[in-house]
Amino acid sequence: MAITIKNEHEIALMRESGRLLALVHEEMRKELKEGMTTKDIDQICETMIRDFGCIPNFLNYQGFPASVCVSINDEVVHGIPSKKRYIQNGDIVSLDAGLIYKGYHSDAARTHGVGEISPEAQRIIDVTRQSFFEGIKFAKPGNHLVDIARGVQTYAESNGYSVVRDLTGHGIGTHLHEAPEIPNFVQRRRGAKMQKGMALAIEPMINEGTYDVYWLDNDWTVATADGKLSAHYENTIAITDDGCEILTMLPEEKEALGVL
Image 1 (cartoon, rainbow, N blue to C red):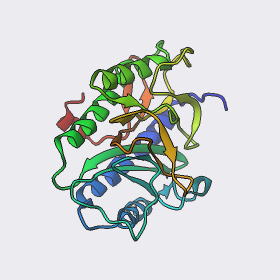
Image 2: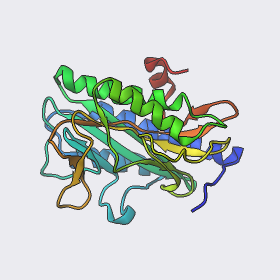
Image 3: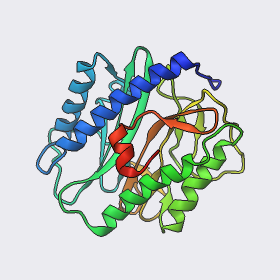
Image 4: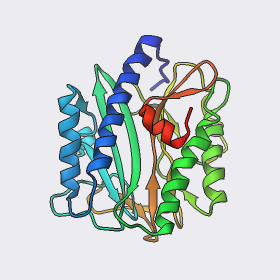
């Protein structure tokens, strides 16, 4: 699949798709608490997306059975919601969701602590989130995708963490996964040169220990090979004339994080 360049109208549709998804994430954040099941979170997510008149793009995507991936502690991504799995005090929970608005996809992930979490857990959440922002400093026309990867990897590794190799970010638009693949680590190839109108899902997945992972028996959920913590942070962005615009953050979230 070739990289597609979006025009202003398409970016406007993706901006609204992203705004609605950011509202869904904010609601999930508010509702996330000890004692609820991961299926409860999925129901909150799907209901809100459908109330907006949108489509949950994860549901039934390549057979995935839910509207949100709920990954806990050592799970990196693609945790399947269950009525039998309860959120516990001290957990860190990654919520990865997306929706389709008027044919255009958005995709975002956040990792939250539940109740009283350890300083180590809070630190990996914070470093993972900041690694995203370190990466997108280089998201502008003329730079290559490897420049984003270098920003993510340098920050994460300088803080003592590792960057998952087996999973990447991706282009996004009228399909959830479009070209190009966007690794979070430096490879020999530079990757595509960025240009205005590219829409990208940038998603650092950062591990406390080794970057090695394995797939659980459900063939979806990915976990750290050593059982240590992992965190995930993702936004959909659009490349602009001189930088990028984050499409999946609310103004108040940007303000709280000091994002212009």
